Image 1 (tube, rainbow, N blue to C red):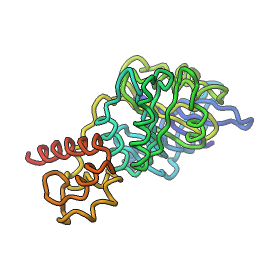
Image 2 (image 1 turned 30 degrees about the vertical axis):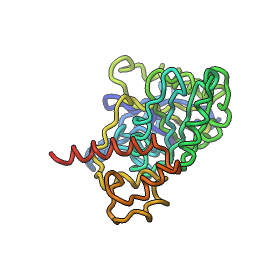
Image 3 (image 1 turned 135 degrees about the horizontal axis):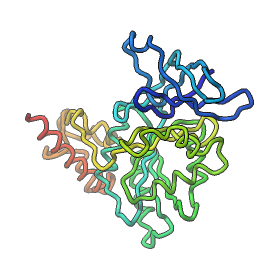
Image 4 (image 1 turned 90 degrees about the horizontal axis):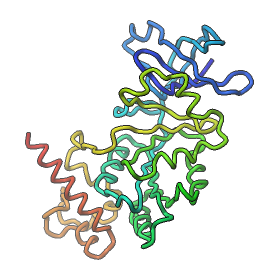
Length: 296
């Protein structure tokens, strides 16, 4: 039987699979000794082959890992197709520096990003439209939604359908409320998984896939309060600001850092309003952070 690892704790792997009738079920599995022998470790998100040892108790063994499409290091998960990053329009005001860090981190891993600004229903000053315009000009798919009122939720569901999506966002932005919107009339509610994998639920946060439809999974990403970029070279930072590309040809120097150099196409575009000043100022802050980190 084939399935997907939705959670792993202390050597146990919880594999979601469908039976012959198409019903979803979670099996508690161990990995065969051959994995240790081959220095191979199953990851949450892996598609696997398993043998069922006890159908009634839903126990089994993982016997092979199917080829991976992608691997993330933090969190350590496999086969993610895209990322969804959620911020509130207001209450709290979005931390754009944190948002840009996440976009860079996903860009390093080659994952497309969807940006979702929640709490549209209390956006009295229509700030969300400005935020959407900024990030759409950068090439990111950007949605304005209200989890509380259901606005924009169906459009977002369509973007998730048939894919595995890692979901991230700081506290207070309505991430849990939005995730709950994805789980109406689904094959298996998250409570079914939680009941099966009760061990460790109230200790350390673990990466866990939530089944929200056929071949559709979301992964709530823990630890989103701060993101370091210290595995990135400062000279590569501009590559992760896609809006810079068309203006770099106007820089006098081929290795222009777009910070203090004379005749810089990027800075000129900022002054003309062709590049968001907010995005550029975040670029400068991150560049200085990477430069300082490189001194040691």
